[in-house]
Length: 294
Image (tube, rainbow, N blue to C red):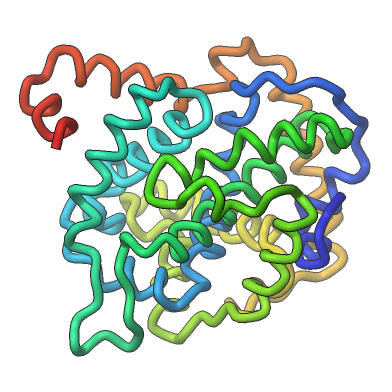
């Protein structure tokens, strides 16, 4: 089930020890436990230089994680909720909101690489990383999927790209085609020192107040490294030993056990809350409706 790149991921190795699940509730693709893998997924996305420098040089104030962490995280969680569990109307509304921000994300003459946030190739890469994260977390929480469920997860995940500018025919036709795309794309990843320094700060949770950063930063660094496939660990210059894998496996099994005891609405928080917040603001906030209508 797992690609060559995934086999280096502690999450993939831990999931292989679990059972299987033959069905799919699309709401299970957004789980609060997935936040454990959030930083790893950010690293994967920014491992493509055009995306990395696009974030590093972004002039969109609200997208600055270090200055507006709650706003930035809410945007990301809402996007995942909308793309995977929202209605077509939700997706169209959020597309307009994201497009307004993306207009200002483009390279300058001083940028090390050329990029444009509307480039569907870059959006495809980001969507592919998000799909890998969705699949990884689903496997951890529910066990490796059978072929039918894996195909369903893949089909649902196509909206991670098509909700923005990725044409439907650009998303690889099936899981085998995706694996070919992914292998070729991972072979070209590169994390330059400037982007690596920024990502190290994200791993340490430098955007949080000091007490939270001190308490949670080391754990986030460990869990993030565990979720990363080996090529991305190499680019980040991170070590991962056998004893780290054993501890990571124990932590993931404990997470899975706790997750199964939680009521469904609690398991899906904060993603369900973000989707509800979007709909409330669209209904009651005239300024928000105007922005969403372009």
